[in-house]
Length: 395
Ligand SMILES: Cc1cc2nc3c(=O)[nH]c(=O)nc-3n(C[C@H](O)[C@H](O)[C@H](O)COP(=O)(O)OP(=O)(O)OC[C@H]3O[C@@H](n4cnc5c(N)ncnc54)[C@H](O)[C@@H]3O)c2cc1C
Image (cartoon, rainbow, N blue to C red; front, top):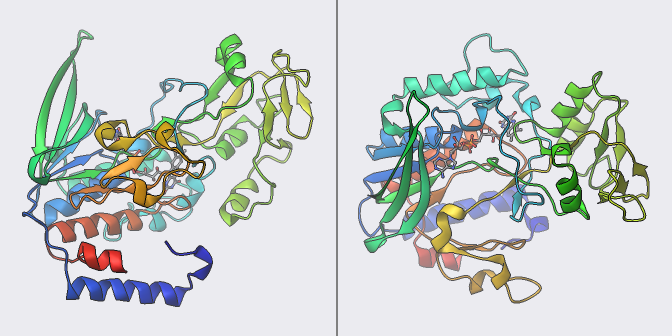
């Protein structure tokens, strides 16, 4: 792995050229042609993956556990189920990035599919959802999607194919829900389940006890960011207190742009030391790391990101507690094709026919989603090459 400090733009370009040349000299050869592909999830990533795979002639099926496309952009006024307090899973932080990235909808659009004429800056989630619905219609993706169908397990099957354990939940007008379970085989799988589906609440001192005594006081923001919540509470809440990890002026410039939008009269506090008073009595007060205490808290809203749940890949996941050393397992210790759940989380998922499509931590732009989807479609249809495993390892 490279040391971040060593990566200059030129070095990055050189490394990419080297990889491209290696792919031409000694291309990876798939053991058999890829024809049937399953895509899990019909959010932004799943939709554009389905489109590009279909366009290179693959037979594509998309499984979506909800009844509509759009993933996270399909807002529901029904509050999501409260997560376990605290949550015991690895996290993906996305606690303060929000719709300000939509300042110019051009940045958010797929390269060949602009937002409708006149879409305003800082647009609404309804407009974003309408955009993905129009995308689905335009590229005729609806017939590919099986709604109300959850992928429960992805199982490695014979000859490198994949078996999906599926459940369909059919709702009847009289309120009955019928569950049907079955299995299907595919040559390849695209995992587009999203990183922001399962809310995460950290393990803070006395929080479990506090939550037991006042369960209604503790919630997760889930569909809304911390900055948005603080802004919408302005003028309604008697006082707003925001607990922030690290200095207010962050090393991350995106944090700083967003933090400028926090209401001026919100009190900024450091990390919460405990959900108790300084004498450790759980009496509904909160003590911060600087020793200050907040009494009479009406509501605690965790805007602390999401859990990365890999439950659907149980067969391939090694549990955190199997890590024997303090440093955790090294990459080489992880059996091929496995994932380790834990703070160090090494991956060794070298499956040529299984792919995660997702967003990097600090930005989320649809052109990037599109490039991932196009690359997978081209590589799996042999219109683009990756280096052989040997070449890849030697690089
Ligand atoms: C509060 C918040 C604000 C955001 N604001 C912005 C923004 O302003 N701009 C921006 O660019 N991005 C923003 N994002 C990032 C957003 O996640 C991406 O824009 C994009 O929606 C990610 O798409 P996705 O397809 O990866 O995931 P999702 O939209 O989460 O879609 C995943 C889909 O997979 C389905 N699924 C999950 N598990 C299963 C299963 N087992 N079986 C079947 N289906 C399954 C889900 O039902 C869902 O439909 C925001 C995220 C959050 C949380």
